[in-house]
Length: 209
Image (cartoon, rainbow, N blue to C red; front, top):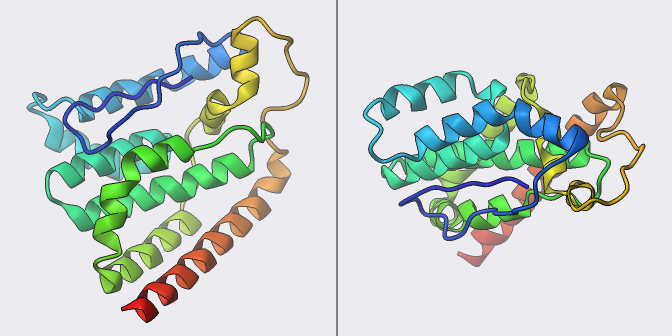
C-alpha cells in the first residue's frame, strides 16, 4: 500500500501498490502522510535545505516510521557517507522487524524495503567487518534505549488484509497489533534475536576471511 520513490538513490525498485486503503487503513495512511512528505523532501536532489532536513530526521528519528529511515540511509549512501548510511539502514531494519513482530497480520512484511535499500549497504558493511560490528552494537543500543513514537501500524499497509479490504473484501475484527502489554517483551525478543543472528553472521564472515 505504500508508495516510495527515491530518484537517483541506490534502490533499484520501490514498493508500489495501487490499491487505495479503506477503513482503518485509510486512517493509518493519513497518519503517516507527514512521514512521506519528509521522505519526498529527503529524496529530492534539488532540495537546497536537505542538509538541515537530514539533521532534523536524525535528531527526531523516534518519530519517523522505518521507511523514512530507509530512505535516509539511501540518501546518506548516495552522499558517500557509508558508515552513517549503514547505521540508519540497520536501525530501520531492526525497528521494522519489531513492527512486523507486533503486527497481527502475519502476511505483513518489510522485506521489500530491505531488498530495495539493502544491497549496496550490506555490500559495504560486510567488506568492513570491524566497522560493521561497531555499527550494529550502536544500533542495538539505540533501539533498546529509545521509544518508538511513530505510527507502528504502517506495517499493516504491507499486509494482505489491507489489500483485501482495499479491493472490497470483508473487514477483519482482529486487532491490528498485539496488546500493548506485550510490546516490551516482543521488542526485547526481537532485539535479542537480531543481535544474535548478526553475531553468528559476523563469525561466519570472519571465518571465511
